[in-house]
Image (cartoon, rainbow over all chains, first blue to last red; front, side):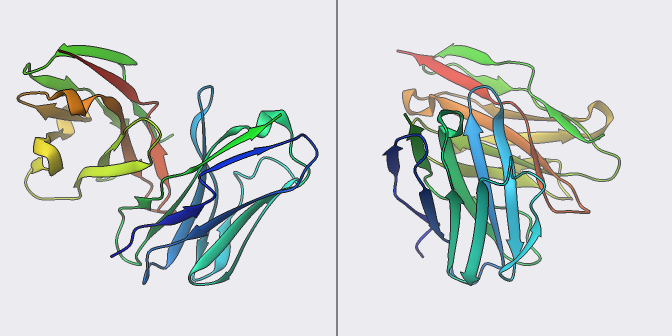
Length: 113
Length: 113
């Protein structure tokens, strides 16, 4: 089975531009998580969905960040406008209902100049 | 408050030597515990998990971990380290109410030839 798929793997953009990160969870998984990883703050949970519905977005840093899950096989994390402090690796993870282990994608390394 | 502590930020071992990475947790109920490994530029890969039962759990790549309730620990071990084990290792506990992971800050392992 394919794992969690993320695109792009690397994104370099300029401050003020809109950035969209994409994630395809493992088929059959009901939960989807977005994380951000930085040297200073480690792994932070931004938001998670259950059955395409956002359950907890308390980790979203500010209104510039938004996430959607239009169907069970696709989610986006959007930053508009982007700022240099958003530079980080963004991970998507998914898990199946009733199971606790999460499976992570390879991440998107975002650099905002 | 629930928390996970990985006391060692960096560990260096020689190839072929044994390894133990420490993880301490603070959690009121029976915890669900995980170890993940992150190779450079990669996502997090699940090494092993503990939910209940036998306190010594076996994982992939020759790793094992032992749950000790009396010490609130879940240390990761490997009898003989390979150069390919150089990576960052994360311990995590699941909040049984929200199913959100609480991650430790990670331990970066360096392997000397």
